[in-house]
Image 1: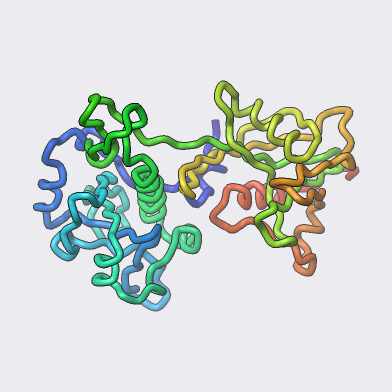
Image 2: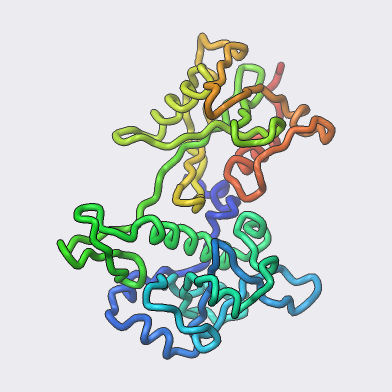
Length: 322
């Protein structure tokens, strides 16, 4: 299988060895904090700081600190070992250990009091390097999990963070809780006129459109989820779901599994029925309509797999006779 499409997805990029074996070291963070070469990514309310650019036209990069430059985190503050850098072009050498620390408000203010200096992944995902985008995506995903899983699901006891930040252990019943990722399918649907189906979500502006998507249910394949979700949101049936690629989406804890599909035989493009809850409007668009800068349609952001699937479709030649 070719990964050329996946390689273009902003949040699927990475240049880190996650170094799984090191997570089992009982004194991992003591060793890392004693190593002057360790670099720490400070995260505050899902935002990070950028390093000062060496040149005016330099690409943005994440601010990474030495442990000594960061106020010692409280014992209740999650620290997660992200792995070792593999980026030969980064400011840090290949093999540099990387850790993310979630700061509280006081720590963040001492580090950078200007709230405007703290930036989010959505705004910089396409501008950062593979390494920096990868570790920020990894950090958001794992820390969101910590935020939502502070207690044992069996007995309700507060859990301890272990294994480099990748496991939560219950001190009462001895069980372990591992990070979870919620799978969601997202699908680019075309009809017999080679138009693409886009929907407008109830939470968006009226002129913002994207692909149909939804979470995979227990006991369901990705392909079955494509057919079900499209029918639930639009009232039409699709056929031939084809996997294109996947991208983590840590807002808060998803992986988006991208597909293409076509309108099933016997289905009419004009029989669209928005579900009225999540999707308020559905429209078929031609390439010319989406490419027209005066159409007023807002498409998904550049960091999303939805935009990558749409751009990939736009770049394809129209079918003969359409």
